[in-house]
Length: 393
Ligand SMILES: Cc1cc2nc3c(=O)[nH]c(=O)nc-3n(C[C@H](O)[C@H](O)[C@H](O)COP(=O)(O)OP(=O)(O)OC[C@H]3O[C@@H](n4cnc5c(N)ncnc54)[C@H](O)[C@@H]3O)c2cc1C
Image (cartoon, rainbow, N blue to C red; front, side, top):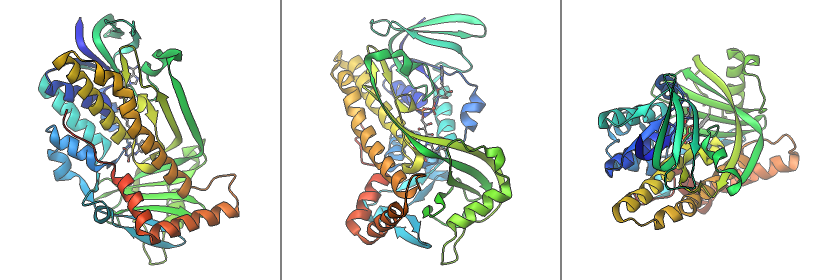
């Protein structure tokens, strides 16, 4: 079987790429190793940049995010016991972020894919990519016990950080990597959000984040050692730590409720450069990872696939490969800006195990400066809502 674009992975990157290509009349097959419920139910991102919502709207996927997503025009930075208001929209000419779970984004994308009638195969096994240096690369996999081979014009590696596509680039690429000496313990709790905006906290016991998923579900995190065993954290102890770090002198604190889900996520920054070799193009977490402090991962997956769809549409429309040749360089500009911002948020708001009292004072001074300078707050706001990007493709 032959297809124009073979897509490995049905996370946000793979599904959105499939949709953009469909709109340009380009056929694709999407292959996913997990089952559909697993991919939808995974609890991950929750914050969408203005650009991502604009893109979803532009390509006909915006109905539910506008109806059910929560637009946030502001956030709080909390330190030394006080909450400081950051008017995101006011500082960025009306741009905002939207709280809309990755689960919901994936549901919208799966529904759109099914409506196109184009192939989306779950639970494929033993996936490998072959002949990426030729004009007929292929994807080999097993489905229902049968070995299959799909030849393609191009392969899009959208298979996340642990996928098989990045290793297939071999030694043709360079990896830039940074691991952090902490992770996040995250919970979903059945509790109405007690703040209308997200609250990023720097506390002497470490970072904490108040967030939400809906009018009745709160999403909360705090910093722990990277290898922390979640089983060592009974629910009462989690709430005690959350309340210790997050409660502020004005009496604000998160509402407590039944914990529905809890886990620990390690944190790293990682970039593959270039994001392609031969006819294999990486997008999303397959190519890069950001620490979640900046809420950029899913948004970068969206910007990567917009660049890639534009380049493939140009190729199929005019035969020109110039945008494909520029794909990596173009995508990496935004990737590195998001890396810088995510790193900056992370090192400003977390306690490092080797940090000393000087570092603590410096971080408090940094936060005091940011919250008292319109120039510094504007820089934070424009990065947090995300830089504008041309939507046409
Ligand atoms: C705790 C946490 C909080 C986060 N918060 C935010 C946030 O607020 N905002 C934000 O923008 N981002 C956030 N992120 C990051 C975001 O979740 C990811 O960046 C996003 O999932 C990337 O999408 P993707 O499609 O590139 O990769 P993935 O979502 O990882 O999808 C890859 C898919 O490929 C499949 N796959 C893997 N190997 C194979 C194979 N061999 N064959 C076929 N299929 C394969 C996988 O099963 C998966 O479905 C967060 C992440 C975490 C962990």
